[in-house]
Image 1 (cartoon, helix red, strand yellow):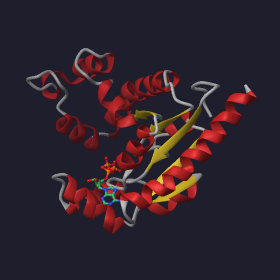
Image 2 (tube, helix red, strand yellow):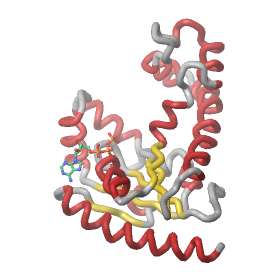
Image 3 (cartoon, helix red, strand yellow):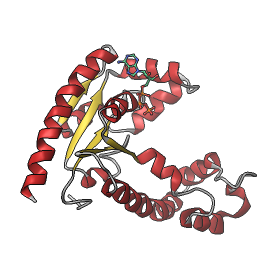
Length: 210
Ligand code: ATP
């Protein structure tokens, strides 16, 4: 594990698209737990004027910049999909900066333990930043149904995204803890409440060992 803050327990929370990561992190946030979101940080590092934005603009020029100066993500996705070397270059610009910022935000956490929410916790290697992992698990059909009813993605797009992520079985076997979100939100919260108390106890013993 990489050291983010030797005194604080960091839990990595993951799950496939539409599995309920936000529903789960909202619960922990309501208990006063600091939440650091890898998706938000990934967007922050490419905001206009940021070093990664400047590097991307210098490499691809006007094609990649929209009128409001934000990146044309659809263009960029297409580019790196077609050219693996470009993907490598882009990840070289963004990944270290995302990691640094995640570490900083986790260090700034004020709660007894902190949570890093990352849809690609295992795939991205961000699991190295955390001490323990929690997967939110639902059957694929529920994932598709919930993700479709929440946003404008159609079923085919959702299934394509699911296919590109690690399998449900793989994610659950790698995680230390698994919460089943196939039932109601109240049923999810009951499982998270138990985990919250476990994490508080672990956080106390982690702090005592320092
Ligand atoms: P994404 O990876 O796409 O950001 P997510 O893993 O954060 O998704 P949520 O946004 O928490 O998932 O949940 C997906 C949708 O399913 C939301 O509309 C949410 O309100 C709904 N949802 C989550 N859990 C439940 C549940 N137990 N019962 C019914 N609806 C749920």
